[in-house]
Image 1: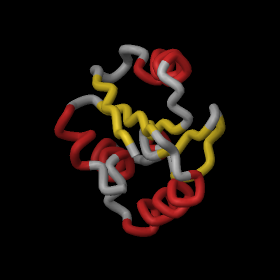
Image 2: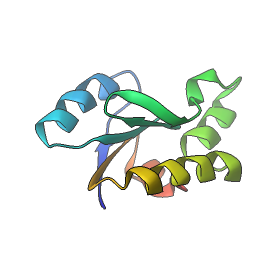
Image 3: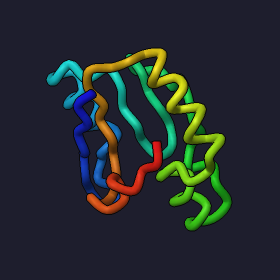
Length: 99
């Protein structure tokens, strides 16, 4: 699977632009804020935006909870995409995603 990182500061429209990038480059799977999105539908994970504080949100977004990470891994294994687009605010955070 080819993994592509899409990096930008919070609030700059990564999620919106990622849909265009994914479409243009035939990428069917996106990981964004703890969610696995397949063909424009959420199919696994939980949103970091639902967390109660920033530290919990970061932990969610980089899949530090083993159950959360395993659920996304399971669905990725079923889908078996050729390409995966991961959104993040830094190269470091994308690299730390424990999926």
